[in-house]
Image 1 (cartoon, one colour):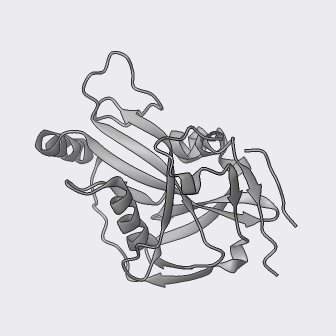
Image 2 (tube, rainbow, N blue to C red):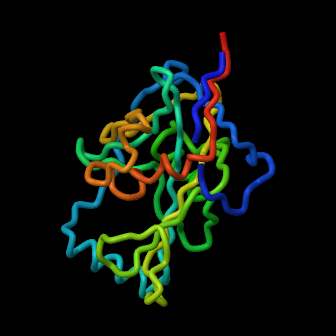
Length: 214
């Protein structure tokens, strides 16, 4: 029996195949979870990170990042899949677009790196839900371009990724994949940051359907 909830997002470049406002989400117990070799992480201070961002900007210009919204159903409520790094920071799966790489190619590559046993191009990447801008090299980001900024340093785009009825998630040992209720992340900037906390609003034009798979 379908479980419907009101839910929207501002779409851009919508593929007709993904134009429906109904999202099929499947129970968390339909998915299999295992681990693989840990991913290397940069150990750096905030000052070192800012210097790295400046160097990348001087070399490649605007830095573009892509992130994925993946949903599952648990206790009759949509849950958002988040990666936990070092048992503290939470983030949406994704990463930086390489020079010459498309945004969709990048997102599939990062999803495979973080959530699959091998390279996998079967991820169903849908529409862009929203964009955030980093005007300077500090950590402040905005869901719009500030009018006094001509040369932003970073753009982060969030895409809807529709999950199939079942899938194997193979996660690096130094990451955890958590299912967090949408009602918990909504407007919770302190815990989740502006992008994650804004996801429920981005999804607010959708209704959620849990297909009867028995």
